[in-house]
Length: 76
Image (tube, rainbow, N blue to C red):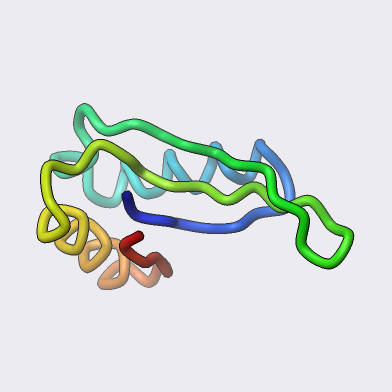
């Protein structure tokens, strides 16, 4: 999976996923979204990831495309 953010609301998590899919539509086709609520110093954040890559290399290529568009991400 590729983590694309730890955001303050589910709405922002949804937006991050939509933005990632818009930036790399061919690579995002058929991929899933995972949003996990985590506690960070008393604040709830929503860790958002794109899932369903066939390989680590495919996930890295997706993350590289996001990075080239100015977004942050990392392969998990």
